[in-house]
Length: 369
Ligand SMILES: Cc1ncc(COP(=O)(O)O)c(C=O)c1O
Image (cartoon, rainbow, N blue to C red; front, side):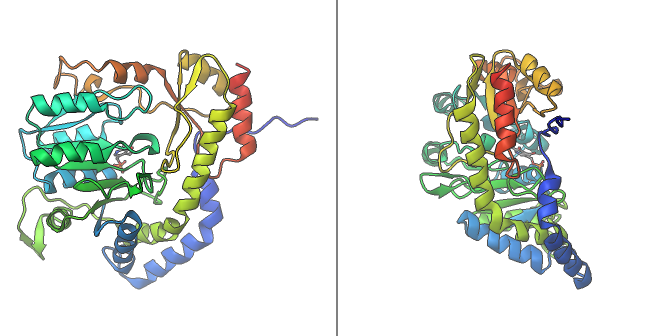
């Protein structure tokens, strides 16, 4: 009897964990035996290795990507009551960080083809409203044009913070994500291109002042033990065990990103359906954190995939300015492209351990819909 094909989950972290389990366990055991669980040698080495990887002078480990954004904004000088320009299609993380400071988000619409900040909308906003900082998001592993944004902002003395939570290792014009703006903010949430076995995050920067402030803010605002020099500090540390795991994974990131690009390009060349549009083939600098397509009948497609036991998801269904808890903040904001994309986008499985056979099965299923 012919066996039914097995389900294809949207993500399956256990595949990677199985491949490297013995390395993880040995390194965790070594850390357990060391007796040092916070800011020990694994943490310090990881900060060094990650800054080298990103091509920045400093990397500062923090507890997660959301804290990285909040701490970077504070370290760049953003204060209560000021406005921060960002996009509304990136899951709400930047908005949450901006609001946590007591600042206010201001949204630029995005480009219909790249889903990244629309440079014309950005230019209009920045010339018409007082802005204390810009958070630019490299969504789905594709880099936004930070250099153009920083050019404009530099003339006005406005810091640009790169949200790199979906862009570990991404490049544009030979420059790495997290190395162009005043600071880069990374998440090591397990599903990220570089993911820990729990939460983790980092801030990259070439600015010694921002690095010092971020180091202080991640640890109660201290500038020496028990001496609080900066207000707005908290406990946000990357722990030793997560740093040890990230050190094992970092050297493999280049190959994993390559595999993600190959999967995305296989989808793009294989998918043929008049209701579906791909985002376009991945360039050498994209790291395809998510493979996202547009579909005029998204719910129909997702139902079809569900019957075939193929996972899918939506990143993200509700733009920030329409979120129930936040819609009162900018009640008159209209972002036609952001709103349209939110109703059409669908994410398909894309992770390094996905096989070509599985990608082909997904393509066949979709093309036969
Ligand atoms: C674009 C973006 N920014 C920020 C974050 C926040 O990271 P974390 O979940 O580690 O707080 C995430 C991830 O979840 C993200 O995708």
